[in-house]
Amino acid sequence: MRPSLRAVATLAVAAAATLVTGCGSGDDWSGPHPEPTSVGTLGSEFVDLASPPAPESTTTPRPGSWDGVRPPDDYRVVLLTAGHDRPTKALVKAVEKWADDEDVDMRTVAADDPTALVASASKALTMEPDLIISAGNDLVDPLAMVTPNHLSQQFLVVGAELAEPTHNVTSVDWTGASFRGEGLGASSAYDPASFTAARCAAAVRAGVAAVLNKLTGIVIWLDAV
Image (tube, rainbow, N blue to C red; front, side):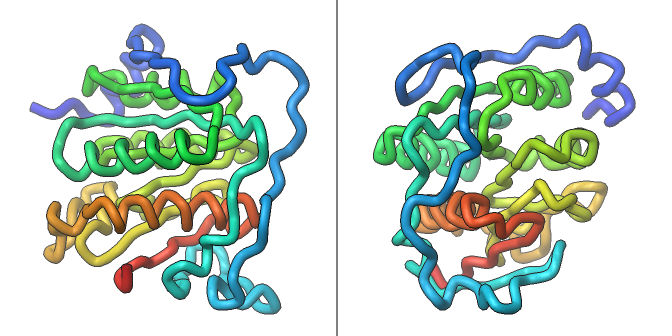
C-alpha cells in the first residue's frame, strides 16, 4: 500500500536520499554566489512581456522562442528525481544532456525509497542551488507540501504540475503529461509515449528560460513541440 503523505512526512527526518555528483565545476557550493541572470533573450512570442502571465496561469509559447536563452556560468542545479518509469527516465536524460551541453554545475538527488520523498526534497533544499528541477510524478505531492515553505528557492517541474503552485514553482506540461497530484492523478489523456526526447529537451530549456527571466509560478504548455 502506498504510504500517506502524513506517514511520509513523519518518516522524512530519518529517511535518506541518494546524492550523485553531476556535471560542472564540482565545487562545494559553499562560497559566495551571485544571483543568476539570463544569458541571451527570449523571443517575442514566448510571452507578452508587456502583459506577463498571471500567477498559476498557463501560457503557450511559440516553439523555439526560448532558444536564445542559456544559463550563466556556474549555474547551480539540483535534479530531484523519483521513479524508474519510461517518462521519468526520458526527463532525467533530457536534464542531464542539457546540463552537459550548457556546462551547468549539477548534482542529482535520487529518491530511491518511496517513503523518503519529502526527505529527498529537503536534501535538495539544503544544497541551496539556483534551481531544483523535479522529474517524476511521485514528487508532485511532496513538492506541494515543501515548496510553499521555501519561497526563496526556485523549482522547475517538468512533465507534471502542482495543483496550486506558489510563485517559486514553474511547470512545463503538455496534453500527454499533466499529472497534478492531490488525488487528481493523471489525466485521461496521459500518454507515456508523449515523453519524446525532443519534447523533454524542449521542456527543460523552455522552463529554465522562464525561470531565468523571472516568469515563474506559471505553467508552460508545449503541445506544439
